[in-house]
Amino acid sequence: MSAAEKAALRKQALAARGQGGDQSEIDRHLMQVLAPFEGQVLSGYVAMRGEADPGAAMAAHRGPLCLPVVTGKAVPLVFREWDGGALVPGPFGTSHPAETAAVLTPHVLIVPLAGFDRHGNRIGYGGGYYDRTLQLLRGMGPVAAIGLAFGVQELPEIPAEPFDQPLDLIVTDREIIRF
Ligand SMILES: Nc1nc2c(c(=O)[nH]1)N(C=O)[C@@H](CNc1ccc(C(=O)N[C@@H](CCC(=O)O)C(=O)O)cc1)CN2
Ligand SMILES: Nc1ncnc2c1ncn2[C@@H]1O[C@H](COP(=O)(O)OP(=O)(O)OP(=O)(O)O)[C@@H](O)[C@H]1O
Image (cartoon, rainbow, N blue to C red; front, side):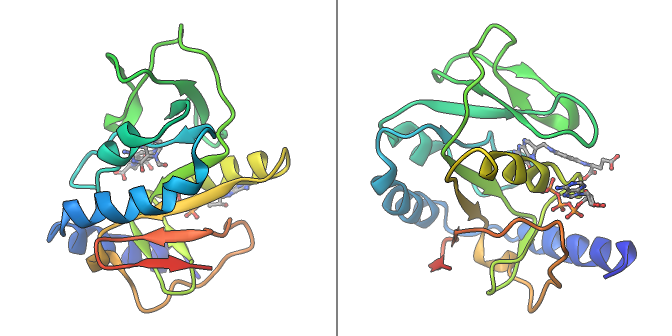
């Protein structure tokens, strides 16, 4: 797939995201899939730009929480512990814990999706951050990657690329898809 084709798919999915979805069903489905991971280190994200919001499910998680930090271009994300307190602004409109927060290694990650297909292929914002990060984490031990999006962000087919890291589950307001 050319970069232009991928950019067009991303644009299409992000436009669809503008329609939003049923956030309470996102909460319910996400809590259901996270229940078996009680006690494990969970990485979530702080929703922005109309993303599906994992906040309620993160707050309900019994176990350590962390958030991704972008530390540079083309490098894996770093994860810092989050106690639910104040955050500092990061690049691209993100928010993350301050440098004083401990660096954690997550076992379960809620991965924000720009677009997805039924086979578990995903598109993000194009930085390759989650692909690099999941590759690194999976080299260290078992990791569960849970993609999160509204159902309207589904695309018919996203061609898989060699560097793409598979998702274990996709959670939307409409359904839970397991791979
Ligand atoms: N809420 C949330 N937090 C997140 C992500 C996310 O997708 N959502 N990330 C997911 O990786 C990481 C941050 N990575 C990001 C990478 C790029 C852009 C972004 O806005 N990119 C520009 C293009 C930048 C460029 O190429 O110069 C854009 O889309 O306009 C945003 C977040 C970690 N935190
Ligand atoms: N594991 C990796 N090692 C090196 N480069 C990678 C890796 N994963 C992705 N990339 C590079 O990152 C760029 C962006 O990848 P891609 O378009 O798949 O991003 P994305 O999946 O939309 O973004 P994200 O992973 O941040 O959600 C690609 O050009 C790719 O070459």
